[in-house]
Image (cartoon, rainbow, N blue to C red):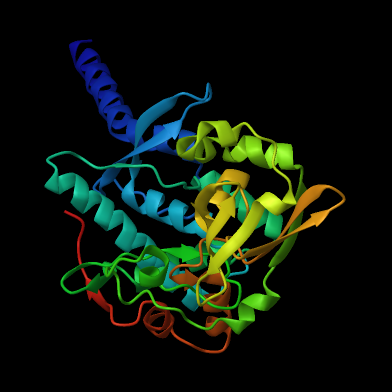
Length: 328
């Protein structure tokens, strides 16, 4: 009887230890799903991520680094993306995340990432909707084949902006900002972008609505003029950059940048023209995004033509170098 009691106790503690060991894995599978071939293991690094909970309130959670990295990459590349383009984007993503971590470390705090990312379940759904079973595998391969690789410029992480498509040419950072920083962000021809999805868009909006959306920076200049209802003659594009994006425009007595106007009206691009149509302001835009750095559409076309991810990165960030680095 004593022997049986001892055996029961041994079995109980054995089961308890197994459950204790497997509990983290079970919870991860429950939250993130087990349908995809994730690289989860107990020893990998976790990062802190800020996101909105089901009530819309911000919370900070811990996510495995590989899962977060793949999720950010998936949020930024379509299912149809070519492998070499995905690899180029992977280097850009890693560079940006490493820079965020480095900035936090230098300020004596732990990094909290806020980049949009997709969970494994969301990637699975994205793949299933597109009926392309190779998508997740291409993401994983891109991560592994560029492992630890980031872009450096003069011994530090490069600034690596990107956008969906340009208006046919990317922009010069120095011309846009008037600053001498990031000389590798120069204007690059991207004629393929003229065939990009949603490249040309037209939006018509009432002058009252334009004024309402631009009110913050109109008031900042002169409050009495901000309250006046504008008409088409009060709008004037005063300067374009060499790539054809609006640098400066005038609204009444207010001078604003093309990017200010774009952000206020949620326009896809600051490469735009304006005209009056039946008493409303019609805005025709070209391109998607700010136009700086890598055009994802052209990068994908370059990959289709046989260019490697290193060639793609050198085209858009000429003068930078790919180096191997670890995130401390």
